[in-house]
Amino acid sequence: MEENISISNLNDFIFCPRSIYFQNLYKKYDKHLYHNKVQTSGKNAHKSIDSKNYSSKKSILQGIDVYSEELGLIGKIDLFDQESKTLIERKNKIKRIYDGYYLQLYAQYYCLIEMGFEVNNLKFYSISDNKSYPVKIPEINEKNYLKHIIHKMRTFDLTNKDFKQNRNKCEKCIYRELCDYYDE
Image 1 (cartoon, rainbow, N blue to C red):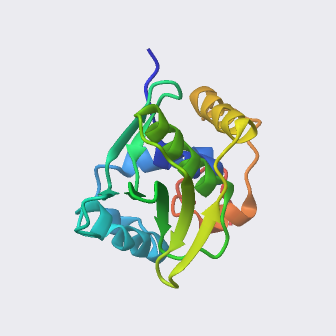
Image 2: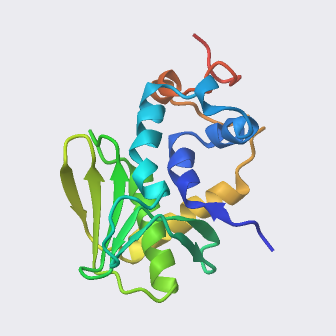
Image 3: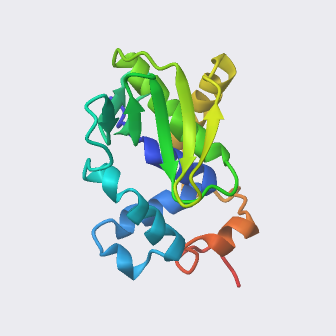
């Protein structure tokens, strides 16, 4: 049986597949040693969700564990409003919605559906500027893309010499000093 993939790793994989390796290496260390300002503020923005203090309204599910046997995914959602049937992925500041963000939201959606929830609306919420970005319910193309990325994650080989780095992403990567693909 294959190991489940963490939903949050979908975004990391899209950013750079190698970053997941370094993330796992540093998992046991204090994040203050290697997180940059952007990651620290993002982590702080999720504190109310992680502690389930965002809302006292009983119809708002906060930070619940989700799972999809079909996709082999596990993770947590930020918010699910059971009244409006809206799944909300919160980000500290959204300047642009990246593919990895969509993959995370779609994965959460499919997990909730498989767990028996009815989800009619999806959206991203940018905390620092209080903006919402509605997202269409994924269709077969989006699900196939998600499955494709999951397959790529399962078959990724860290030693593959054909790996192509993205210089722009490398410049923003907190693990760049450790990575043998990064050169200043």
